[in-house]
Structure formats: C-alpha cells, structure tokens
Amino acid sequence: MKIKKAIIPAAGLGTRFLPFTKSSPKEMLPIVDKPTIQYIVEEIVASGIEEILIITGRNKESIANFFDHNPELEYRLAETDKKEELTMIEAINNMAKVYTVRQKEALGLGHAVLCGREFVGEEPFAVVLGDDVVYNPQDPALAQLIKVYEETGTSVVGVQPVPKSEVDKYGIVAGQQLSETIMDVVDMVEKPRIEEAPSNFAILGRYILTPAIFDILEKTENGAGGEIQLTDGLKTLLSHEKVMAYAFQGRRYDVGDKQGYLEATVEFALRNPELKEEFGKYLKELATGF
Ligand code: G1P
Image 1 (cartoon, protein in one colour):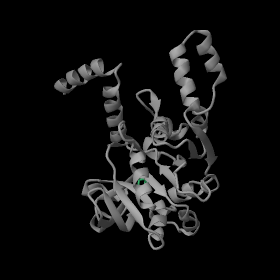
Image 2 (image 1 turned 120 degrees about the vertical axis):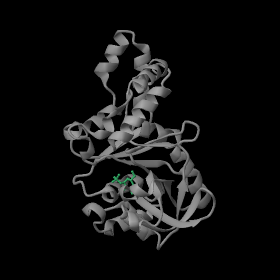
Image 3 (image 1 turned 60 degrees about the horizontal axis):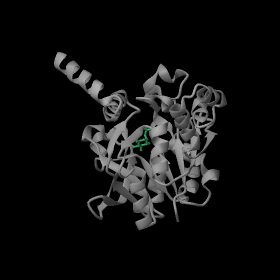
Image 4 (image 1 turned 90 degrees about the vertical axis):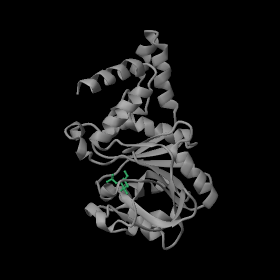
C-alpha cells in the first residue's frame, strides 16, 4: 500500500531551548532563513507525501499560521512588486495539505502519534520528528525508508550508528543484519543505560509504521521519563509483526540540541549560494583568530 500520509509530532515543551521556547515553538527556530519544520515538511513532500498532520500543543499556533495564507502580507508583497518573495510565500502555502491537531497533555511521543489515529485510518504511514533534520538532496531520508517499506511490507525505523557514549539519548535497536543497510529488528529499548544498550544503532526520527501500532499504543504504559514511548510500542509490535531498521544515508543534525542546531545553521549557510562565499571567508578568519 502506498504511503500517503505523514505525522510530525511537534508538541514537546522544548526545555533544552529555554528561554526561547517559553512562548515560541522550537519547531519555528530558523536554520538560516527557514523554520526547522519547513525542512521537515520539504523532506516529506520530496518523498512523495502530500498529506501531513502536525501534532501541536499549547503555544504552537505559529506553526499552523506558517502553513496558512497571510492575506495582508501577500497583498503588500503584490502591491510593492516583490514578486520573488510572493512566489516563495505562495509556494509554502501550496506545498502540501497540512493539518494540525492538539495533544492536550504532553504524555510522550507514543501518545502524540496516537493523536493521529483518525487522520491515518487503516493505512501504513510515516512519522518524522522535527529534532532530526537530515540533509540529502539527492535521496531524502524518508524516501529511502519508503523504498524499504515497498520491498518488505513491514514497519521500518531509520537508524544511524551513534557514539557509544550517546546511546542513552535515543531509541536503540538490535537484530539480525539482512544486508549492509537493513536489519531485521529483534529488540529495541528507549534510552538505555550505556552499559545495557544492545547496540549503537539509534532511531533517528524517521519511521514507516503499520496501523497495528495504534491498538498497541492505546495500551502502552509509561516508560522512560514517565512518558508513553513510541519505542516501547514498537517493541510490542515486534511480537506480532516484523520491523526492519534501515541505515539511511544523509547528514543528520540533532537540532533539538544547541551544538547540533549551531552545526546545522553553519552548514546550511555554507550551502546557501547567497551566503557561502562571504560567510565561509568570515569563518576562516574567525578560526585563525581563535
Ligand atoms: C525521540 C525518541 C527516540 C529517538 C529520538 C530521535 O526521543 O523517543 O527513540 O531515538 O527521538 O531524535 P527524544 O529526542 O524526543 O527524547
């Protein structure tokens, strides 16, 4: 079955970016000139999906506004003959069918995904997390996972190896390697202690899930951090269905973390034709002075 829908959970409190997140969603933090969530939506659209549900929470109205029309701005841009800007704004409005729903309590990622049950119905679907921005213009990370789903018909989680010292930040998978990039998952654990991690393959914010996950999430109890965890739901799914892990290609940035966010900002600036020369020169000068 074709993957037609994607969920972006964006209800988290963003405590790692306080005070910014006191009144603004972290998904609206700009990487150069685009909010983080635009990179995520662009990857989803480039992967062939046009219906997107964003799970939001309190103080997240600016996300819905961003994907909606702004008649006053559009009128002003048209009046002042700012054609390029107007085209850019209209392209965002028309990029995809973007819907939002509010998660009324921050009960965890598993619960946020469950909020998309009615939107998804009985189809396999994608989940893309906003903290993981992946740069791969030739072959978007989500498109890579969709290809694996089309071959296997199973749920697929996108993974990459992370340093052993960081496994306690992620959902970690272990299993049997079927090829260089595909693993038949036999175990997964959310934020394991370093000495207990079954591998260093971390789930990095890209999932294709079968709808069987919803019944499971309804019954999943609080796990790591006292929250309903998607990883725990997936572990239960393993006893009913196969789940594959796919080592996707692409430069991934942990933009939920200050260091990762700054790396993304610098590297996207260096890829920007308008900025790369001047900014690159500035960085070189700065580096020699430190
Ligand atoms: C979430 C997931 C975790 C995954 C991570 C990727 O954790 O629960 O399994 O590895 O995203 O970024 P969070 O970063 O929300 O704590």
